Image 1 (cartoon, rainbow, N blue to C red):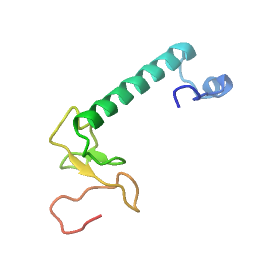
Image 2: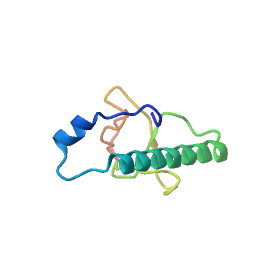
Image 3: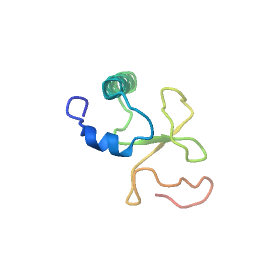
Image 4: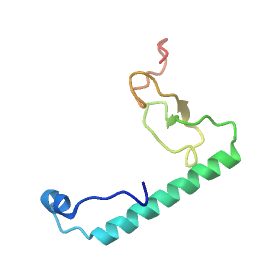
Length: 94
């Protein structure tokens, strides 16, 4: 994704509300991707039993990053989507 993500300049020009620096946008995107990859690697190295393909949510179902908030709960994907509403306290299991 980092190397091959491309947006045609005409598409950006058609939807922009302000002038967008495409080079700065690509640099920012790449930096965000690298940071996310480093965080995921750090988590995998420090907690090898952590399941993959899950989301982390608070008690209200809002997503977050477990590296920033270790109180988050693991939320597994389901047939309703990767991040459906989490109902706390009811007996439904997804």
